[in-house]
Length: 298
View 1 (cartoon, one colour):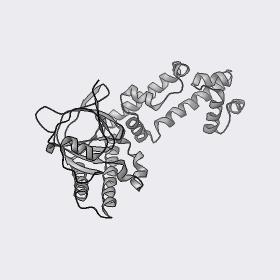
View 2: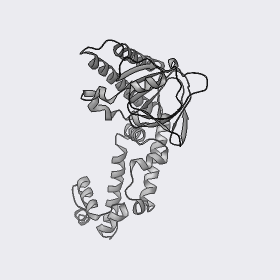
View 3: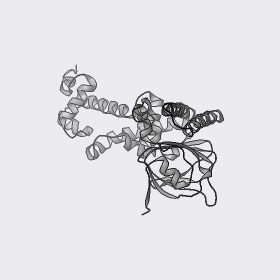
View 4: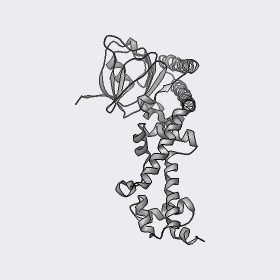
């Protein structure tokens, strides 16, 4: 098994790759200026966005390898383990933004980092940009770079964090656009999800493995859970979790009105371990208990 290289901070990243760094918590670097090559498995302890100026090697998540072309952004969040393999004999043309969790801790950006779900997307779910979008991203990176290389004062952190937040908001906007412009492919994902959900609920899988999860369907469609969830929300206006729960409610209603099964058996058939869990869930979603709903039958 390959040894995992721990990259705990932007400072450590720059040290390992032989890149000049001016601020231990944030850096914007050009990877083709690296004086050391590091190939292998790395565990990131900070946030990183890589803007690719050309196709520059492979990245592997788990057992799957992806390549990526110019004009894309790959984002990596703390705790992600990534295998990087650069082409032999040359450095990739790539600009990287690296920033520590400590930089944004206690700021408005720190409180909203969880909404930037693309930090846990897979590399094959990279952000693909138009030339104009890419120019906007480069402008944001330049502002962060300039400020991070200045002598620090009591304005420095606020200005850097503000520009990082602006960049992440642009990334959110561009991902929304990407979901829309790839609508034909996206619709295929939605149709596949709906069919998988139907099959799961009617195949006996609920009794064997319990209630379905978003991760289960994302894995079946070969997407990361966050990308899958964001895509479904963009297409339907509802989260994937809500669609799953609505399906469970609908089937529960059908079984309550269309069969004489006890509520305990219906709960088990739907994937609930205990009948009282189903009863609480059903009342929360419908406003009445399963028995009250059954007794309302004309």
